[in-house]
Image (cartoon, rainbow, N blue to C red; front, top):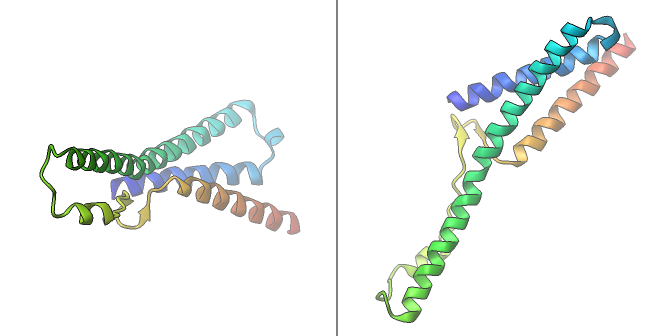
Length: 134
């Protein structure tokens, strides 16, 4: 649940920074304010992307470990080093997907990064078009 809260705070900070730049022109702000907002946006986006990237690495590493383990077991059985394992067929057919979640609310996969970028951009364009019509 903590990881979900950290990701949500980073996402909301990123959204507020994008919204701030969508509403106000860079020429209307002084340079220190612009640097501060850019720094906050970059840090929150990097935090969010790194958490999701590292959590998305877990299923990839699990699949690689499983493949290496099963190949070693098969090699030992074929060479006669280990006795024939009765559950080897079950091990080979088992396809467990281990994915980290944030409080069982969000599944942390690498594709989530693109989803978040698309969401931020969509709402930014909606905000810009709603401001330009008013």
